[in-house]
Length: 378
Image (cartoon, rainbow, N blue to C red; front, side):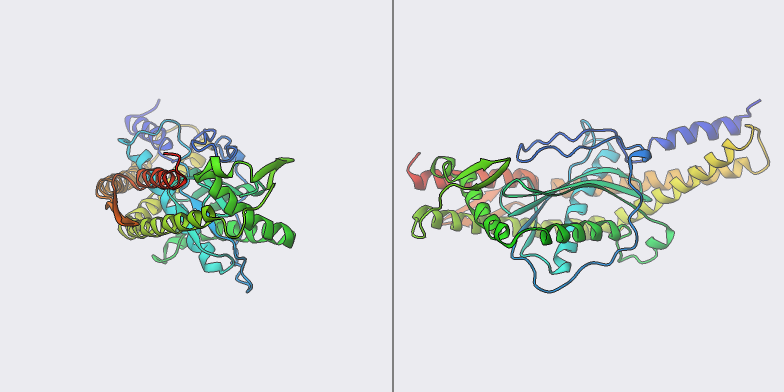
């Protein structure tokens, strides 16, 4: 016979199992810029082994390639902005992209590394990510890195596992080894490139960015061959349109750098609470796992101490929900209070409002209009 305390404990355990931020979803790219990352089920059987302790490669002679890290995708079908857990995943997408940017910058292996609010052909190498699972103990992401020629540098799933010890240092990232592994794999991919291909990549990157902003003027400069883009012809050094494109590109870099300051603010404001939530989630996962192991090895009988066990599980559950609610309120406040971005374009001042990704979309439309006007097509 199942007693009332045991029944409550079982119901609570079932409720808690739904809290992990994993999902079963296939990534639906909204950008159309690159093929979708294949995101399999979030079941642990689909995860690779956790990455080992990894040392970041910091050799000299950095590549002159600029890298764009697009804000990660949530990996959740039809996310609900009113749901605390979905909102947390939205926060994680930005924090994870910013941390990968920090690791790539720390390595000293690249040119400028920027977080991009949305996908674009701004950088020679663009990194996309999808968060597959996150519960404070296990962090699983799908990563795809593709360059301007359409060459895929990296497409893999990464898994890192944290323990209580990883949360002792409040300034350290518990899943640092995962991000370091990504950075090292990107560097290894770069070393496999022929120097001629590397030089060609930089030229294609400039032309592809120009083609994105002014397709009519640059549609014939690139051709696809065996799935990869290569220059069909090159603009003259004195081509005034390339000078305009370079000026516009500098304007976009200014915007991205301005927005980047707000990502730093996001990390400073939400970081401490986010860390508490992850640690509470870790404790909850460990308590639930221990309970499941005990329950699977014996008959369901009420034993001495079972009510205390229930209280322990509930305490972990309650702690997680408190941190979730705090993070939800902070994240919502951050989105609502995102500062408008004010930039100068020639003699005009442009004020952009909304969330950071909305501001980025507005800014890119303005840049396209500027190019069209200067071409005389409007």
